[in-house]
Length: 124
Image 1: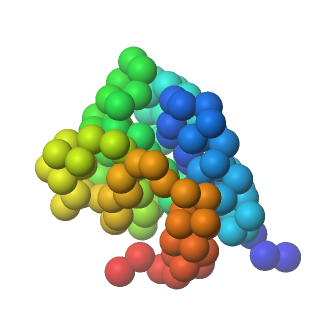
Image 2 (image 1 turned 60 degrees about the vertical axis):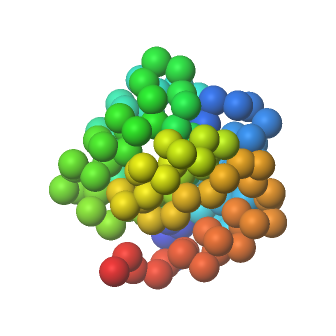
């Protein structure tokens, strides 16, 4: 039996979270949706996601802190992180730590195609 890759969607906007979650699910991922930064930090510490879609401006804890947590955790060395934000300047400063930066608005089809390409492909 094939195991689905696991993804976390860390996005506080409910509509955008639903778009991201649906795109990942249709691409074959098991997905957990998270709507605030503190919960995201707890889930990142407790799981080993294959992919994280991360909004930079989150309630309680900003996405750059969560990104730092992911990159500092040796267990998450192979976790792909896609930053999803409307803040181009902030995203640009974090680009070296991310696998990909997408500027909002992000369409369902755009994200679906991207995550489908990453599925089951080892990170280099």
